[in-house]
Length: 176
Length: 176
Image (tube, rainbow over all chains, first blue to last red; front, side):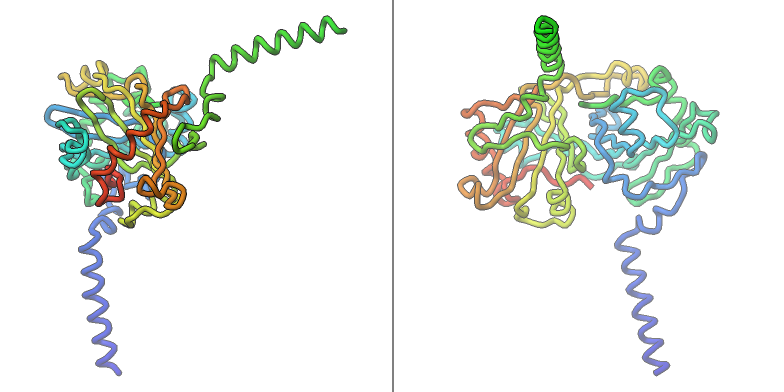
């Protein structure tokens, strides 16, 4: 009996390692990003669409901006500044041509999401007390495996968002 | 009393006209698109994000593809063909540069949603019996005021989607 129990334990352990290798984000999701201490928000992929964008140049990505309930309500009502509890998620995918779509259109015109870049996932979290020194916003960036970007990277977030002060430091407008 | 009643009626009528001019889509939403008889689905703007795209060329738009619960589940599970009840919504906005974002980035690289083009809103609706002649899909297109495109336009939908037969006539893949 003891041998069978040990064997089962060994099998279970191996299975556990395989499962966590197949889904690295399940563990990495638990890691908080530096500076603002923000973790990946569970269920963010189900949030409502705020807008989309294409960043050309070095980024060369297609992106979607999603909002939690507080963010979506504030956006739709045009409320500024965004209330505490607002969370905005930004997902980016590399910008690649779609051969299949181009064939249907009969020309090279269709660009779709490709592999995830290092800046795959970002969050802006409004907490006017906790993040008072950065306009009331906390920032976080994660790669597709849920690994946060480093401290130096996170220190660039707020300076870059400062030009959008008139829109509460948020660049994205609501796409109706 | 009769005069007051008439006056109130006149005021109410004028107010009604003003209201419907300010919100034309409230009435137009009721109009079914020709050929497949599909109306705008209430609440589609709250559906989950399936993917995003940029169509260059004559269309020159940025688009978001949203799915109802049935569509989202099928996409996430990689289920083909899509089950009956699947509804996919496609919203398009004209592709315009963002001066504000470009200023922050220090270069011309940011493109965001602008005014709605005539092909603002499209739906694909799966009903394998009702739409058996067109691969099980019904199609509909509306402008931003909720006015459906004409019959000739709707007759181009399925022929254009035929090259995507191997993916159940749907071009869009899920963006993870």
